[in-house]
Length: 558
Image (cartoon, rainbow, N blue to C red):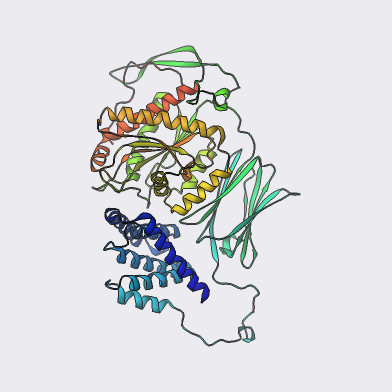
C-alpha cells in the first residue's frame, strides 16, 4: 500500500509541475484536446486486436497535453476521464497491473479534482470495479497442485519487440518495452560481448532464447533470454567495436543501442582538388528532353566552412551520391493539423516527393525517402535507415506549430544542446515525447562526440535556411526568417552523415496553411530546399556546374 501511495503522490507532483511549467494557455489546450480526440476516434475505429501499445501511449500523451496547457480548461475532465478509460483497456488487453493502477488513479483524480464533472459517478464506479477484491490470506505453498516458484512475480515490464538495422560499419538495436525499466550495461572479453540486464522485466514467450544473426564485419549476433524470473539479458557478440552509445526513448519506452565498427571508407582520396566529368545538358523547350550532351573537365575545390577552416570532410573530398529525405510524422501520427484540417504528415510527404524528383533529375543524385506513403515510421528507424544505406546527407522535413496563429516563418535545426525554451518545445513536439526525454537526450549529447559531421550539419542548416527564406519570400513577402537553431532531435542523434531538420512554415497559421494547400506553394518550398542542398553540395566540390537552357521540371499538379 505504501508503494501505491508513493506512486500516486509522484503522479500528483508530476501534474503539478507540468502545470506550473506550461502555465495556462486556453487556445493551446483547446487545440490539444481536438487533436487528442481525433487520435482517440481513430484508435476506436481500429480493431481491438490491432490496437498497439504505441498508439495507446500516443493518445494518452496528447490528452495529458490538454491539462499541461491549461488545467482549468472545460474539457480537462473529459481528457482525464478518457485517459482513465484508455488505461483500463490497456490493463485488460496487455494484462498489466500498472495500467490498472493508473486507470484507478485517473478515474479517482477526475472525480476528486473536478467535482462538478458529468463523469464523477461513472469515474468512481469504474475505479471501484478495478480495485482488487479483498481475499482471505492462504498458505499458497501448502495448496495441492500449486507450485511455490522462487522469485515469482506478475507485475513485470514486458519486452514486446526487438528490432535491428545493420550495415558494414553500423548496427542499431532497439529494445521496446511496455514501460520504463532500469537496466545495466556490462562489457566482457574472451569472447568479446556487451550485455544488458533489464530489471523487473520479462520476455514475450516467442522471444525467449532468440538469436538474431547479424554477421556483419563487427557484430556477429544478438541474443536475448530470460536470465532469471525478473531479469532479461540481451547480448551483442562482436568482433570489433570502435564506439557505442546507449540511450532511452519514451512513449513507448525503448532502449537504443548504436555501435560503430570502424572508420567509414572515404568516397574519395584525401586531395584538396579533384577533377570530375561534368555534363552540360541542352533541353528542348518543346519536348523537355536532352538534345545533346557535352562532357567537359572541370576542376572542383571544396570551399572553406563558415568558420573559415576546412573540416576533415572537405579535406577528404566527400562525394555525395545518396541523400535520405525524411518526411516527418505519418500514419497515426498526423503531426500539426492546420485550422482548416491540412495535416503536417501530408504536406511534408508531398514536399519531400517533389524534392526527390528535383534532386534526381537535376543532379543525378540517388534519393531515398524514409516513407513514401502515409505510414508510421518510428523516429529511431528513420535514423537507422540513413545509416544502413550509407547516406551522405539527411534532410528531415517538417511544418511548425505555435500557440499563436499569428506566428509564421521558416527555421532550420541541427543537432546540439540548447537552453532556449522555444527550441526545446519544438524538439519535444517533433520527438513526440515529454520534456523529460529532452533532458535525457541532452545528457546523452554531453557524453558523445558529434565531431566533424556536426560542423557540416551546421553549414548545411545555414545554407538550406538561407535558400528556403530567400526563395519562398519572393512569393510571400511577409515571410519571416527565424534563423538556424539547435536542439536535441531524436532523428539526428548518431547520424553517420551531416543532417538537419527544417521547419518549412507554420501550419497553425491560417495564411501559411492556405499557401501550403496550393500545389504551387508546395513546389516553391521544394524548389527552395533543392537550391539550398545544391548550394551546399557545391561548397563541398561535390556537384558539377550545370548550364540549363530550359526548365528541366515544370511543376506538375499533385
